[in-house]
Each structure stands twice: as C-alpha cells, then as structure tokens.
Image (cartoon, rainbow, N blue to C red; front, side, top):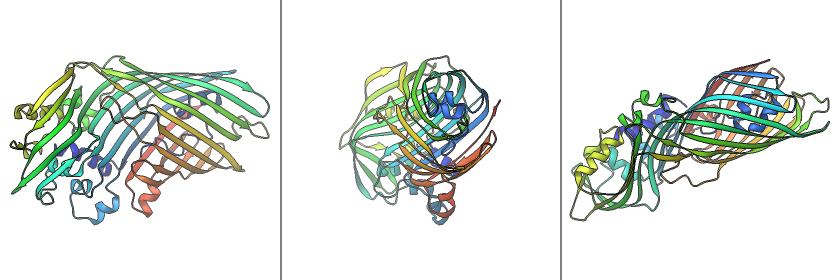
Length: 449
C-alpha cells in the first residue's frame, strides 16, 4: 500500500510535470487541431486549409500538500509531507498524447480526425491519519489511539485509454464583421486499464503499539475494482503504456459554439475578439478485460478485533490488498460486477481572446466540472481559470499563462510558438520564483498548408 500511495507523489518530482492541458497555447491565434480539442467549433477557424498534427504531448501533476521548496529544504520523506497537517491529501496526474491527426476546411464546413492516448492517476481526499498508517510513514506521530471519521469517499485510482476523434464544424452566420460557428466531436474510446480503491464513510480507530499499527472499531463501504495491466502493479510505469489494446467500448461527445469579431482589414488569420463555449466529455466507457472485477464490500471490525496494517506496507496493487482484506475475515461482499462502466467528467469550458493592441492579446479561459466526480464510477479532473497575456505575430507567439487551480492554487507559466512548433509550461515561473505545488510541461509540432 505504501508503494501505491507513494507512486503518485514520486511522479510529481521525478517527471517534473497542472491540470489544464496546453495552458496558454490552447486558444492560440494560430488555430489548429489543438484548438478544436477544446472547442470543436474552432475547426472552421483553421489558419490553413489543411493541417496535419504530427505529435503533441502534455504531462500534468498537481497536489495540495508538497511544494518544491518542501522537497529541497525538508529532511522528511515525501510520504511524511503528503500526510502532514489536517487537510485531506489530494493529487492529480494527467498524461495526454495527441497522435497523428488531420483537419481541413471546405467553404463553410470543416472536418477532422484525431488520435489520442490518455492516462490518469489520482489520490482523492485521503485522510492524513489513515494515509500515515497505511504507509507506516507516521508511526511516530500516531501515538496510542487515533480516530478517523470521514463522511466522504476516499479514493486512489488510475485509468488508461485510447481515443479516435471524428470532428465536424460549420459556419452558421457570417458578415463582414462577425462570424458564428458550431461544431461537434465524437470520440470513440478504447478503455485499456483501470484500478480503484475507495473507502466511503470511513469510521474507525488506529492503534499504535510499539510501531505495530492496527485498525479496530471500524466501519466503511469499500469499492475495489481493476481491469487490464494496472491490476498487476500500480507502481510499474510500463503498466500505464497500454492504450489501444481493447476494442471500442465507449464514446464521448463534445459540443461547442464560437463567436468571432473580425479584424478591421478582414485578415482571416487575425481578429478583434475570438470567443467560445463548449461542453466536453459527455459519455462513458466499459472495461471488459479478462481480469475485470468490481466488488463492493462492507468493512466491519468490532472494538475487540484488530486488523494488522503493517502487512499492507509493501503491497503494490489493489488485487493483493483485496486478498489480504478477504483473508482477514472482516469484509462482507454487497455486490460485484465483471464488466463495469466509468463515466467521464463532463466539463464546461469558456474562453475569450481579445486583441488589445497590434500583436498584443489577452485571453481568459476556464474549465469547470458539471458533475460530482467523487463516486467510484467517475474519472476525475479539476477546475481551473487562466488569464494569458500574449505577444503574437503570424509565425510566432510568446505568452505567460496565469492560473488558479482547484488543487494546487496559483501558478504562473511561460511558453512560445515558432511556426507549427510550440513548447511551454503553466507553472515554470512560480517554480522558479516561489513555492508551487504544481509542475507541468508540454510541446508539440503540426504542419499547415
């Protein structure tokens, strides 16, 4: 169990990788397939008649506990820092790879086809005392008996899947000054791997006797689910590399509209204002691997019984955790499924990019969840708001995204574009000049003609 909880924290620092993908470049003046992934209506604004996406990737991690300054200045282990204080521990990891893609516009229409690979891993609302006990990182801080009483759902989960996207957009209204368009994107999903360990309404006592930790007088509702390679090991990065191994077992729909105020010289590659709204991730996917399982249990330990927590310290997958709990005799199964469905976190996105002066633009972007993703049948993300001043010519851009994120708070970044190549980070400035609980990097290359 220690390895599972520690895996996400190590990724924060070893991968050096924020939740909003492509922060700052996602509503670039050079409109391409990347823009349409945030709002499919943007396809009709393609800067070129045809575009080929070669490769884009974005790695994102944020947490609410550990900063770079903590790592540099503290002698404590990472897991000690994660479970320090009273606030529940949260961490989000997101990997997005945009593979080969093609888009074109024809008169009032635009079309696109894209390929994507996604990996997510999360620590969600884990009680610090329970986290310390399960990792044995807080043996010294857990003295005697420590009570844990949470009325929310604590989760550790991860998922990988592949996508093929089919996009369509059309200009609905256009004059010399204004343009209004709408678009949709249908994403066919290839669910590959999933794991979830959740403890809802956990109420119990942790006992420390000479470093031997145990759980007593405890009740909780548990969900233990796994499918695909991640079931064999949560801490092996190779288990997160499988994206298209299964067939099409899900879908997601994105819907968007775009409004543009054209430039005075009617330059199709410029504007006074470009804005839009979209609803994304309307859909779900079903996992059907050979090792599929999703079990719900009641955990019930009386005040005269004790569950040894030390035995979970070196366990690195939820299947072994489940077996140890079953061997203890404290679990009662309430339901089970061989195939299970995971809903995507439906998002509302809105943005506006305003031309303030020649080559100088300021944009605002937000993404907000429309669903409660605390349930076990949801993949999760986080809310964010970003303000980006940008100096932009036709073949270059320099920009500074400034964001407020649900998990990690304020971040400042930097990025640039030269032609079809771009590279940036939504948090590099705060990492250099201030403590930050977030780090990210992205890059990509596309060709327009």
